[in-house]
Image (cartoon, rainbow, N blue to C red):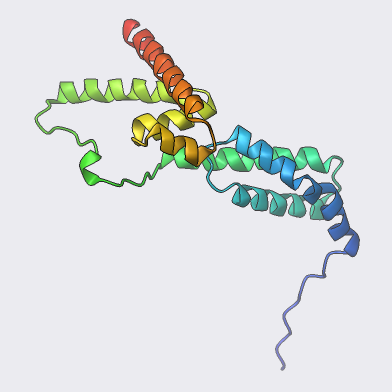
Length: 184
């Protein structure tokens, strides 16, 4: 008894490739610009775009698509949101100097520790409530300790823009923290 040769799925028809090229890939630069603007915290937009292409390709294999562009942008938005959520749940932030890490003081009692955790939670809420670009700049400068000049160069912005965004971020965070603490 001879073994059965592995079955291969038939190749997609040529019109599927043509459809993908004209209806989906044609929006590549627009999609990347949208993702960079809407999700500035995502480092590798290319990964989001490629995953979106794969998902759209698979959907097209199952059923016809009325508006490829709308589907592509919707899928990309969902992929990016999933990535952002995953990053928020488990943020891994590289640290240049271990001495800059904040470590809980063991001398704190349990009540002080709970109060401190609560205040840190309020500050995190304040930072999360900032607009995306402002939040990104604020975290780079105020949390990671990068110089405004370095942040400006990294993000392709002017030093003045970075300074204004940091100031706005500080003001909004301060208002948020004051409101939350006043409500208690």
